[in-house]
Image (cartoon, rainbow over all chains, first blue to last red; front, side, top):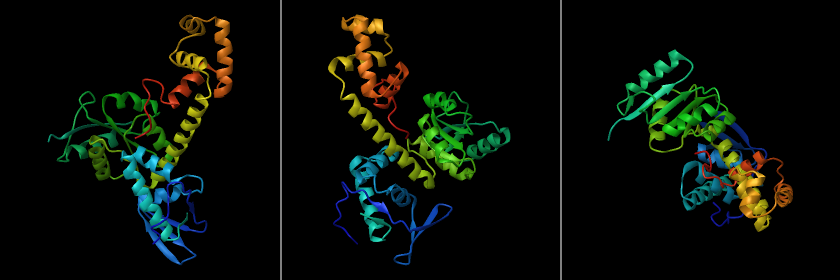
Length: 94
Length: 203
């Protein structure tokens, strides 16, 4: 897992070939490059959907804080954890 | 801790009655009238505006279409929570408890749409603030007075300038802000959070 990525000004991008299957509240995302299937919870899925290559991690954290009422520091930390996991899974590019 | 007082309103009498009966059977909830309710569950609101009055007197949980735009409209109108109309009654009861505790409730799979909307809103607000910063001090005074609802004559009187000068300031200010009407200015001020009654974001 890459734990050294500085997300503060990053504009992460979803991997273009990911395959998504939604079933109820669960979402499976398949990465054909690695052949791995990943189950994302709602929060991780929402962050992954925001990874359009234009939205910064800081903007994501700000939006999460607005919607959830989390303190800015806490939402920034949550977003960083989610992005780090998505990066490790090969589902986003930093 | 007392039970949460909840009421249900909607166009389908049978559904409204069934949900009311279910909520009344929950140990943490009690159903009540609209005047004493803490949480109002609104089923299929005809318009977002119909939520506004309810949100003034209680926390509102909307049950609406499984559509992100409908959810965003409901939350922007003042609802604290939104669930699909097809949500199981148990989810609605949990939603009532969460809303009563001041927590936002959104369908998990619509969270991404809501976050995208908030990001767009924040970007637009930042762009508006940048445009606002280009106004001269006098143009900003005119902007503030116009946003408060004053007409040209009142602005002229307030700033000790002529109506013609006010008109000149307005023309430059409108051009800088890319607005065209008095209503646009009020909307611009609202987006920038400069009106006393502004709510920041859907929660």
